[in-house]
Length: 238
Image (cartoon, rainbow, N blue to C red; front, side):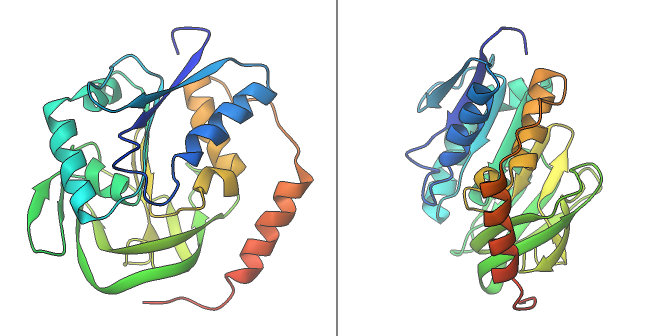
């Protein structure tokens, strides 16, 4: 971060906003505010600035993904920002757009932004329901919770690692969930996922701030997380 105000880019919210993933920007802004840190959310609808600290991409259907990737390939601000170390976080369609390629349900393959070593193709059926992910040490210690609603099955290459292994749900479709390369991360989890997983939100903020942010004990959030973990104990789906 180069300025005292943390600048959060909400990328194409009118296109990648089907599942209320724009709420992730509100979560980050509020967690900064509670710590006395100024922030600003920049809604990116046309030109993509390269100078922001963190970029968020949300979910959307096939047509929205195709529109988004065409727009972002022609205006490569996210790619340029990632190359200098900005944090980029994608959800669902955002995961697929950040990858190297994705195939939509009409069997058309689209190039992705190439920030993650991951390709996505349609699976045999939609994955819908609660998800629990046991994360790797590069993400943290607390499991991630969220809900998924996607047809895609994502295969990672050697250039990206997963966020963790799926305890309940489908995730990428191979027992893993999400993808990460450096400070570019993506997941299939909605919720918004950063509201349901505050430690995960603080991981992203720590990368932006250059140091882990001060702890924010919130018993009510912990209680809601436990409720969601109990709700997800219905066994894995394929």
